[in-house]
Image (cartoon, rainbow, N blue to C red; front, top):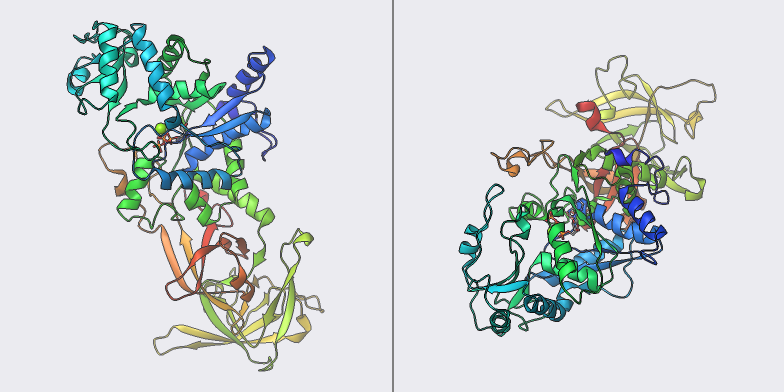
Length: 567
Ligand code: ATP
Ligand code: MG
């Protein structure tokens, strides 16, 4: 974790830790530079949001919340793309699910196309922009390198009037893509390559999702972003460190466009990286397209939709983002830390239930055939407010197959021939016989129960070492349970530039248990509702059913950090 997050002691959202961005905001407000703050979250609607975006969302919306300011949701939609609307809707859904609200207006960079055009005209009039009639390849070749200056374009000193005319004709569609561009006229010898007459506008004869065929020239990111910020009165424009070099251009544009309404301050922080996964839309798209996962919302994906489907509570994700803090130093956060935030939340809030993932039948020989008893069990050991549920008990039960061992060592405190255990909340039972099929596999256990131990305690004070979960065979319902593991086998799947990250996909990231049993009450569980399956972990109901029509439960997280032990 970063050094800035050292004072991140208090978990939870109310106690956001101090960080360098808050220090700057405090100073700006104290100096009266702004009456209040305005931040923004500016996704490009070309993919689904992932945990990295969640960090940016929590940061920007969290600052607005804590400082009584506002945070705009703005789509950075300067690349005309077909599926924009589909992604834009999913993004809004995700931000809302994470618990944030952007008010009445959804902002779009495309709303500013006309104003941006006007700003570009102002730059041309001031002699600070020109139409370059060279090919993109030529322009690239003249850019120079870190050690060599670039070369001036032969069109650099073209009269402003000529550029104005050409720019208008670019807009009118008189030129083909790549025939000419509008460039800022800054300094081809600048040590900051970004300032070597960057392209501000290019021709793209593609319809835009929102503006249709109105435009065939589209502004570049560096020109659009700062001016969109200025038009919206953004006070602090917070982005990731990759944009540090772009800040020079951000500032240049705002300093030089005469009618730019204000000059927001760009601040950069380190992007979130998490081990055993990838956080890049482009790479996540490959996983989806090549069917390594079932979709953007596959519960193994680090997308907001995937995490949500897996059962991660929004509050746990927010808590994670608060706790990792904000810094200027790149770092990689342990996936186990995200999981521990989820576990902490679910430990407090998820009702308990019995589920037998790999059932082994147990017949209680001295229990009457037709008898059924109902045991009232607490939904949460520490929260009486969460109430109780009834679980039926009968002569035929299921226990977990790995809770029985025929040749059990002494320290095996579960069931074995001749040994007594507690069936949680019900009775003590003793194994009397093991029944096998012809192949020698155990198919059933015969047990006896002690009627004196009703409720799970012996009146004579005798103790048993093991307590097992169980289900009545005839009352439990069938379910499919899906266990998830890390998506990648390597901590840093993109670390080896010689090899494709997809080579490191974990072939065992999904295990399906098709024949599990769960408490009957879970038939009513809603999609994404989470439970602690006692002794097994935290699980959430999937929105879909299995191919055979059973309810599906996804393992959200294990009870403990099993990975920490493996390492
Ligand atoms: P990707 O790298 O996955 O393609 P992006 O940066 O292109 O993401 P945008 O839609 O442009 O995606 O991102 C919207 C906002 O989210 C930007 O302000 C960006 O800086 C921020 N963001 C993206 N990835 C991360 C990350 N890993 N950590 C923190 N913030 C991020
Ligand atoms: Mg981006």
